[in-house]
Image 1: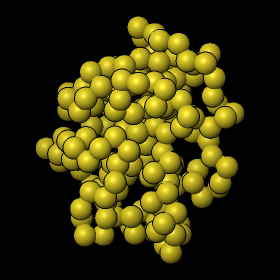
Image 2 (image 1 turned 90 degrees about the horizontal axis):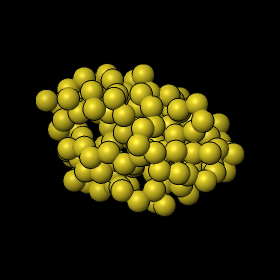
Image 3 (image 1 turned 180 degrees about the vertical axis):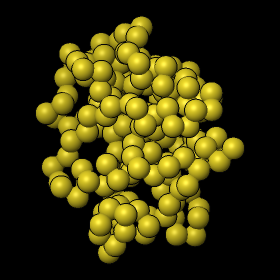
Length: 164
């Protein structure tokens, strides 16, 4: 059984879906859990029920928005994909530090496949745990925002928060 909670943040509502062990399986800047459930790998999916508390992750999110930008590093995520590159790219993405965004080209290089810029972009687009696997920290070559499932306003707000 999955649990979910929607919290209000400076970037808007953030809904977090966790598994039995408290690992985050989906997260996004929406108050609609139905937008998140299809992002979860079928082996990790299930019925989700609302909860008043989904564990320590909520405190870590509050700490992040209160200025402790490293607070999210302690959050356990549970992501799966069918491809080895995608899983590796998501792990590499978690190592991109706040305030130090990279381009898609740099991200592909960090992930060990410098020519796989489209693959790097796909890893961002398919990321089911926004904020915790920080795809918002990956930018276009010219430094512009590119895309973000939860809107460019949210992406800009997160980057500005991390740059402060």
